[in-house]
Image (cartoon, rainbow over all chains, first blue to last red):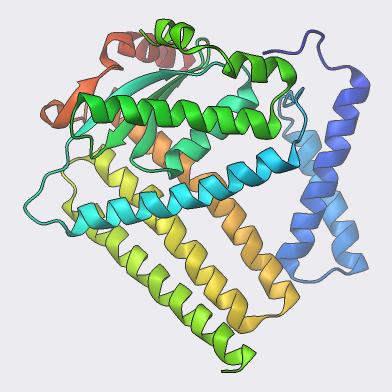
Length: 192
Length: 124
């Protein structure tokens, strides 16, 4: 979902100030101490970064939901552990050649931020890795490792959509939530 | 058992588990049949392995400033590892370095032209 009106000058300055603050904190952490010298040099360097390497503003029109965020984070950690164990087990299963598949998963929320976060999270959960991402249709092409059969493939596809649901519950706007709360018949239609 | 002893034990478990995962990532990198499968090994057990070792270190070292540095490492690792794996995987697919006989399904193949054409336009 793109925001209806383009960001104003004030929005831009606000995001730039936020970026400078965040970068200054990182700078201080990298130096390992909060001193006045680090603070001022940090502000100088971050201002230079923000001015000379401007990035398109990230549109965020949802809101942060602490419970949803916690649920997302916990499930993410569980998924990361499961994924690592899966790859580790496959690595030590001698005489077995893992088969895989590339599937297209159309996402339902059309925001850059959502797509980026889903893609990042998907890369770290069991058996999936982004091969290609289509910005126009917000479709992720995902390489799935260790796919046994068609049924398993569908389960993995469902897994990605569930992840998008959880992300919407953590950071989505009401509109985005509604998009995820669609009934199963409609989802099947979109999938084909 | 004292608190320090318990913390030491947790740190030890984290470090050993992290080391084992890193080892398995290395083994997977060698053993998996094609590039895309190998990128799975580079993206997942390696990240968790590093996170576990950092956790172990954080418990053992315990000074705030070192822990914040480790948090930075963890955040950058989580943010960059998937992107790196994606870029390598994408390049490999566009170059046709995918072993089709290992793929159960390839839903990217019908849409692949879209991306290769786009990349030609993008190249300056």
